Every structure is written in C-alpha cells, then in structure tokens.
Image: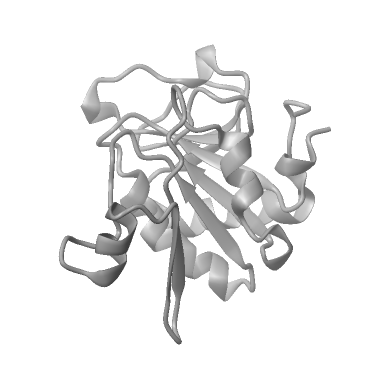
Length: 179
C-alpha cells in the first residue's frame, strides 16, 4: 500500500481541459470544509508560472537567485521553490511536500496519467472521449449526461453530491483499485 495515497487519502480530479475542474472545485471545497474536512489541493501546471509579479520583492529575490522563496503574512504563506528537473514534476514528490498531518483529504487537479484514485469529470458538449475505459484508477464518474458504466455515477452539475462522495471517500478511504 502506498502510504502517500492513504495518509490522508488522495483523490484526483481527472478531466479534459475545459470541463470545469476548477469551477467545480471552488463549489465543492466550501462544502467539504462545512463537513469539517481539512482539504489540501495539489494542482499541476503545464507551464511556467508565478504567484507574484515582476516588481514585487519576492519575485525579484527569486529571480535574483533564491532557490526557495517563502512569502508569509498573518493570513497565508506560500513557498516557491526553483527546482529545475528533467521532464515533469512527480506527483509523489509533490505530495511529500504537503503538511499531511494537518489534512484530512488531498485533492489533486492534474497528474491525469499517474496511477492513483480519481474521479472523472465528463462534459458531453466538449466532444472528448471518456477517460475511464483506459484508466483503471478512475473510481467514479461525474457527467452531465447519462453514461453506461458500472462505476458510481454522479451528476456533474450537483456539487453537493460530489462533495458527499468525497466525504465518503475520505472517511472510508474508498479505493477499489487496490492502490
């Protein structure tokens, strides 16, 4: 058993671009918090990004050569680490960076091709194929139209039902894939 997947449980959100992953998560996260869950998020970016902007001290210091730049206030903090690696970042390395003992659930947006439990989001109007036939790690499907599958099926437009599934996943550590 991979302890990075179970302490706390890790659940991916798998979908094609344009499906509305982030939009859905912004509706689901408050519902999870209302259930008392402490949720961590790991989002994969396919491009270079900054959380601050040119002209800000933290940006200038990082660009000047700081390999780690921690930005802190009384309300939040963020750690930017310059870590040029060949290829892409590893889901497992990024999960290890989280303060896992302070979380009840970790949701992952991205890392779709990694093998870990995932909830597939499918929006028919995009015309993209379903992911679950080719990914045994998908444990449920949230779609805006009926889909013939043995997987648990959720309504993509019902954030409360999706949050309830996530709470159940967290509390029971649902993982039919054996991961």
